[in-house]
Image: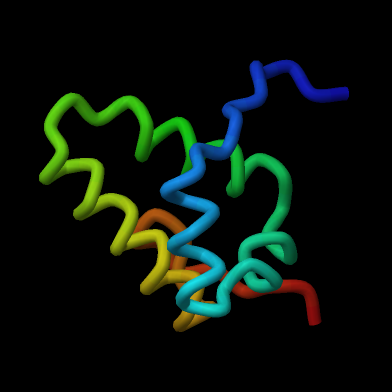
Length: 76
């Protein structure tokens, strides 16, 4: 059972994932990681921060070995 509220995916995040062909990598991550990324990005007050956080998420998904700058190993 999930105890945290679910953060909806904004259109700009969806478009960024699709344009970088990372939607499958995003969906492969555990629910809490996807939810954390969305909340973290959308809570930013300045557009520069939103963009920087979005780029970090995209880069981490592309690399596949990071989550919020921490080492991450997906399911083996």
